[in-house]
Length: 343
Ligand code: ASP
Image (tube, protein in one colour):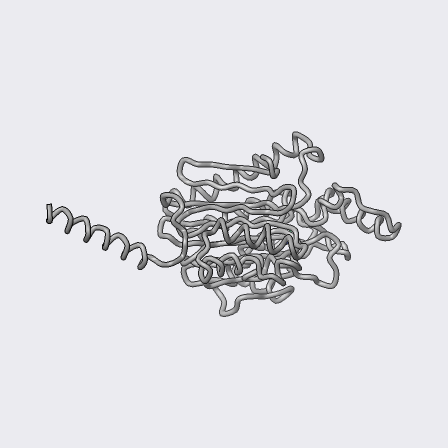
């Protein structure tokens, strides 16, 4: 009997020690999956009543394909960096999303894209702002992360660097899509007529930024975000998407985050980093941290949008404070793709 009690005592002691030493960050919600991947295709006034069946189907299919691509990399034991890059490249090539082909237009009628990438293993990061000639801005951001001593490059310099790294260069006209061009024209007309924009035009203003966060079999988290920014943006405006800590953040000790929404608010309130900081210093779980920042703090401040995030144990969070957010995730044997709040 005494032996059994002693055994139990040491067992409990060992268990509580390992719990503590594994860190104080709260991530023990479910059993850790081998890998996990989560994506978004933008948040905003996405309402079922304004969506055609075709459009909804196209978005759902595109999100499934983006997840398929990233999941295939992770399943094979590939890195989270590759999964994020491949998945985002697909979404950049799709005209459905406001990134790469399908990027929104600036006030001057150009397409200026922003992207960023962060690796949770060493917290190395790369970002590009205001580029118009690189087919895959996310690959340019990854090149800055891996092949340069800098974190952020802008405009022509960023394009020259991407070109020097062998990335595909395209004519700026490659990014033209009729839908986004018409959307700019409607906004310009409403400005000159001083009329209100309709709900669907307002939707078009900043829709479809893409992002992806992945956890690979080695336990490394990577996060990336890519966007055309906001329709009618002026003066080389740069949003939150290429700002590390606002649009993108990754740290193996806590979580990876990719944001979408009204960029100015995400920059001012360092949204992505704040979620990780609440876990790191505040002992919150990913879910709690996401809710506090997106559905409490941002709402109080008037900032609209959302994030997709995952923690080091593969828990997923996709909080948003808009009517909808294109979003989805995959883990072994599990797949979710959603658009509306009540999806
Ligand atoms: N966050 C992006 C920006 O402000 C836009 C978006 O996510 O819809 O540039």
